[in-house]
Image (cartoon, rainbow, N blue to C red; front, side, top):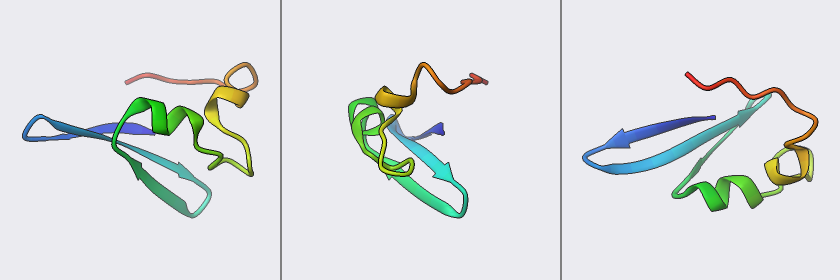
Length: 52
């Protein structure tokens, strides 16, 4: 996932395999069950996150 900013309107883009999805805020990103039926909140202890 990565934050994308355009004229002070930030969105977050997530991808998994060949799927992409944009989110308006971090809460949507963390709670959407986008990753094989699980949310990032559910997976946070099992994934490695890199911040650029």
